[in-house]
Length: 110
Length: 117
Image (cartoon, rainbow over all chains, first blue to last red; front, side, top):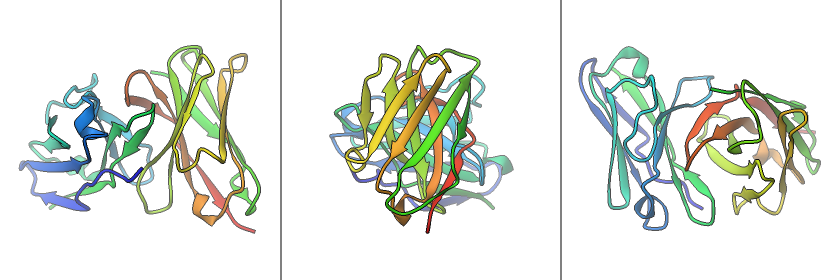
């Protein structure tokens, strides 16, 4: 299993939008509508923010949205806020009851 | 949401076995899936595997030959054993609950395990 490919970093000014891509293959991202996303602040455990490609768990602001096209999933953060500065990881089923995480993206709020 | 807490030795010698336990509160382990995920210092997340409340397991193919999970429903705990460890196994180990496909919705705070002599 290779990690799903994410850009190492993205940045934006407060109030702007940023989009993080998560690229896999037809055996993982492209083959399932179960991509999830996690936010991780330094020294903390990851927090679940998106399930099933685009569903937000209770309590997650609607500034966070997910989508998928083919083998690439995306997370968009709208109205960027200082607290959004964190690492973000995608995750997908990868067949045979296994999962694979993305390589991670650091979001910087300028 | 359930609460999870990892426990175990923070230092393991090379070639020995890493053992961690995850204690679950606020919910029963006799439901859903229970996962282990690790993160080497400064690096990304790696899925290790899950154990279902039925006792069935699934492991990351890259670790499958060295890892074993177990459940103790009487203590509401689940455990990880990783044998023949090397420095590459040094990481923060997280336990997490999984209620549906890839939805790791509750996480422990993480336990740093260092492999060193």
